[in-house]
Image (cartoon, rainbow, N blue to C red):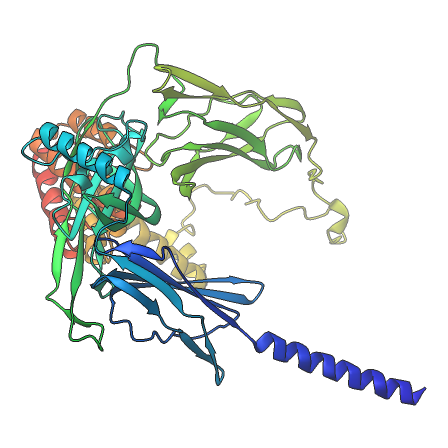
Length: 607
């Protein structure tokens, strides 16, 4: 039996070693996209390394008949198995039959080589006599019909509007090796309607460095990045690569909105032939910057005709709403959480908060909202939660009625209303009953009378006796009671002084104190919110700019003051919700603007 066990162990060791050796082997193969080409064509050489991981690099043979001007690498890993593809873009130098020699890869001390590839380079494309005759006739026809200037290549008619605009802009810049274009899917959206902004960086020559990108500055918009991709486009007979960045943009208030130029910094690479035995050399140029053109957007107000009371500003289609409670059975006096969730396309952050009706047999507290966005399949999806606390007042079976939430559908040109399902809550009597006073727990003092509580002060025989002196009563207090009394008197004095201070002065002092501690845009916005709440009783939480402007106008603020507030507030909102640079303005500059605004408001407006 032991003999068979030894054989099995030896067989197992051999199997593991063989598997390890097999796993260590890799395969290397090479291919080209064409074996016959002309001097005007490009050749793509692909080298596929299967099974190797880590830092590997193919060694190309001498190829005097080609110039290599671009290389790209991509790696795919599946179940710990790596496949790396190296692609080289080459252009022929002279006609004739040539060969791409074996390409070698060294991995873990072992060298792997590919088979040679034969390629034929023609001066012009080979053609038959009939083909040449047809081509000659076509050439004569084109010369007769062609205008004096080459017509621009236009995008296909069935291409989506956004892609068609990018395509046509790129065609107009085909004489440049590097350029940027930008386009939007809608130039006149409604307020709170999300549209797409796409920015593309085209290049026909390689570049060096990381090429840092700067997103466009925005005005009267929220901006959320939703994805990045790359692709290729043939422009004027030249193949361009491009990198595309897409955003979901949402208009804030009706009026004009601006999308500034996006920019990118890059270092161009140039190549120069040395000899037949050395393919090329690469040299870098000075860093350059290119940018896209600015775009102006017109934000339209939503129609007011047939606008329902349950409309809170959402624009789009495909929204859903759901209501839920964390407990369906509670005792009287206990609290439950009512949560309403709205989901749909676009950005729900700028929309107003849901207003809840009064609920019978429940005490309802203020609604607290939270919102977020998620990029999905090249579009922007968002959600908004509304949460409130309900306290059951008495026992019984109660129903939380259905709640309405409306949105405007631009495609249908009408308002649509969503409704939640009614929720049933069972409230049972409270189990925390009052047990009253326990007389049995008191000590019998021997006279048959029990002391219930020491809250009785016996009447004196002589009212207003000389022995009654308030100083004497204070002297009887111990030092702890005296300290507590002094603390209460001090607090009352400070409160009296504080309330005697005008609210405008209190608001200004509090806001300035917060601005001194501000380190980011959100701190500045909080300081402004505190000032508006103390002085004007304006609560800015989830409140759109337009509503705050109306409140300031009602309190007597001038048009210049309101404009100064709106400009600063939109910059702060953009910094909190949109990943863009605010015209290179730092936090210190925004603090100075906030102090200037507070000074203006403190001088001019009434409470």
